[in-house]
Every structure is written in structure tokens, then in C-alpha cells.
Length: 439
Ligand SMILES: Cc1cc2nc3c(=O)[nH]c(=O)nc-3n(C[C@H](O)[C@H](O)[C@H](O)COP(=O)(O)OP(=O)(O)OC[C@H]3O[C@@H](n4cnc5c(N)ncnc54)[C@H](O)[C@@H]3O)c2cc1C
Image (cartoon, rainbow, N blue to C red; front, side):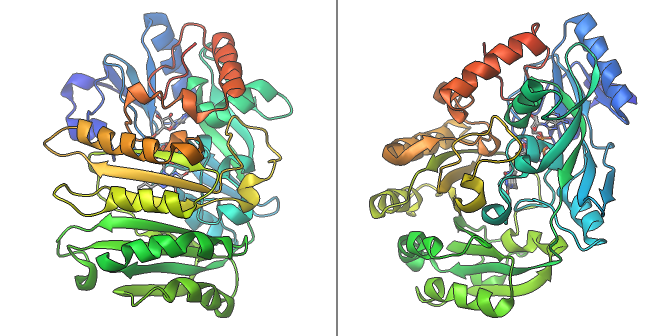
């Protein structure tokens, strides 16, 4: 355990991947073990200071100044059990470490677009993976969790032994404790077929129009998405797409390349691609499908979960990303359904399983501040309100607090249950620095 006085730390030290509004903790503890986390929680409770947890900063919230920040990045161990096809994943491990460890046994994990994201934070928020339609959400694969609750107790939580706490942590995340490690199910998948294809600006409306019908034709073994991305004019971006607003169609398919190629035909028929890379790849290389930005930056984003994506909804989305005097936001529409929509074996607070698509907008925060990002998010929510059934908390990046992002991420009955359990497990609200469940 390495305790620091936060005064000596720079914004870069504290921020992690999200560089906007770095935390202002009173102290930072780089935890090396579960017992370190126990000590910090006991200390914070005795001092009446809130506790914040951070692995990578990819999903950091606006935080309360003066908190005790538990940095978990050194707790990055991963242990694979090839017989039971599970991995024990420590609090600070990134997906990259899990994917590499699982690959040694020909296994894969329910990871998402970026292998740099923390596996535990991602999973506790739901975890919409690249093969979600085949395997369900990451949260559905959790077998047990080691967690430090507000009373300083280190518990091994399972759905059978602690149904309430387990349900609440799986969705309510650090409102209910600091997870020091969890066991997650793996899949027998060595390779995946997929990649991305880029269409030029003038084809964006056509790609978006074709996307619903195309995705509805895909088998559950395939999960696709489309992004509309204003790419910067920077040398590391490949020349054909550099400095252009493009539609980026991605797909991951757990099946042979010959079938995968056939699945692509309807969307390829929209028009020529500026760039296309599709291949059968080791699952551990699946981060290349999305090619998410690896460099920390300041961003704000929000999302809506939709029951359907019809032509009117598509037109409204197209209007939001239409190029204009202001830099358009990044748009992402992921296809859901399949196993995501089935009742999971492990009960969790993650709801809205019936959603067929998730639509997200993400804006870079520049000199004009976060309000312009919030106004784009408001436009998205208003435009898609007729088809919106909920929100996903893990894709809410510093959204406008006025839009009530936490409450609306749960079914009303589930939110009431969460508030009751919050009163039971954390009556003093020691854990109030993340996306906060308010009683
Ligand atoms: C580039 C990028 C790509 C992404 N891709 C996907 C994707 O494909 N699918 C998807 O579902 N999500 C995706 N996300 C969202 C991501 O899952 C969330 O932002 C997640 O919270 C990140 O977790 P982290 O630990 O890396 O981040 P951190 O900012 O370190 O943590 C975020 C939050 O996770 C919780 N948390 C972290 N560690 C613990 C712990 N030990 N105990 C209790 N709570 C904890 C806390 O609430 C914390 O505030 C992506 C995000 C980014 C920025």
C-alpha cells in the first residue's frame, strides 16, 4: 500500500483516461491487496470521508473534493481456470490482461471495444461486449465477487449466498462496496472474424438508413455497430480517412470467414469504402475491430436504449451528426438483442434487456466547456424519446446531472430496491463518489 498526500500530485496523475475535471481527493492510496482496501475503507469511515475508486479513469464521474481515492491499478492480477473456464480478475486489471491470459487456453472473455478499459468497472456497469448478442452482457457471467463493504468487512459475495448485495453490486457498482476481485465466465473462442469498414461523408445517411435492416438480418453469433466519427487531421490516422467525417461499420462474428464475408454483403452494397479491414484474428486482437482512441482526453457522452430503430429515428440521428459550423459529435449505434435480451442466469440490477439498440453520442470537451456536449446529449434524448426505454450507466460519461442519469438507468422498481439496499449496506453514504444512488 502506497499512501500519498494528494497535494503533491498533478492533474495527470489523478485523471486517468478522462482528463476533464480531475479528482480533488484529500489522499490517494495505491492499493496492492484486498487488505489494503479494507484498511482504507476503515480509515475513511473513521474520518467520515467519502471513498472513491479508480482503475483506469475511463468511466470516471464528477467526484466530491476531499475524498479518499483508492487507485487499484496495481491490483492487476488475472488467474485463468481452464477446467471451469473462468478467470479471477483483480480490481485494476484491464481487459488486455484478461484476454492475453485467457488466450493461452484458447478461451475468450466478454470484453468490449477497448482492451484498455478496466475489466471490473466495465463488468459491474453491465459490459456490452463485442459478442454480446451471442454471450449476453459481461455482468451475466459473474460467478463471485470479493468486496469490501462500508462496514470494512471483506466478503465473498455470490448470487446464492448474498442475493441482494450481489444483485445491487452488478449494476450499482461502487455504491455498494469496492470489489477487489471477481470471477467471470470465459468462452471457448480462439478466433473471431471481423473488423471495420469506413464510408465517406456523403454515404453516411445511406449507411445509417441501411443499418437497421442489415443488423436485423444478422445471426446472434454476429454483433455489429456503426459509428459516425469526425476523424482529426493527424498523421497517425490512415491517409484515406484522415480529417474526414466517416461512417465506421464494425462487426465481430464467431464463425468462419466464408460466412462472415456473406454477412457483410448487404452493408457493403451501400457504396465504396475508403478503407476496409476484415479478417479472422486471434480473439486477443479484437481491440482492432473498433480501434478506440488509446490516448487520454476530455470527453462527455450519453446514450439511450431503444426498443427499435425505425426510419424516423434514423433520420433524427442523421440530423444530429450532420456536418455544420460546429464539430459534430461521435455517434455510436450498437446492435443488441439476442442473448442480451434473454433472462440471465445471474440476477443483476441491469435492466432494459429488451432494448434492440443503444445509441450514444460522445463529444470532446474543448475550450467552450462541457455545456455544448450536454446540449448535443439533450438533442439526442429529445429526438429519440418516442423509442427510448432506458439508459446504460456505463456509457454515461460526465452527462448533465440535470438529466438524472443514474435514476433513469434503472427500472423504477429496481431503483427503489437499490435505494433500500443502499440504506442497509452503506447508511452513512461512504460510497457516494461514483454514479450515485440517491435515497
Ligand atoms: C474508450 C472506451 C471504450 C469503452 N467500451 C465499452 C464497451 O465496449 N462496452 C461497455 O460496456 N463499456 C465500454 N466502455 C465504458 C466502460 O465500461 C466504463 O467506462 C467503465 O466504468 C470503465 O471502468 P474502468 O474501471 O476502466 O474506469 P474507472 O474510471 O477507473 O472506473 C469507473 C467506475 O467503475 C466503477 N468501478 C471501478 N472499479 C471498481 C471497483 N473495484 N469496485 C467497484 N466499482 C468499481 C466505479 O463506479 C468507477 O467510478 C468504454 C469506455 C471507454 C472510455
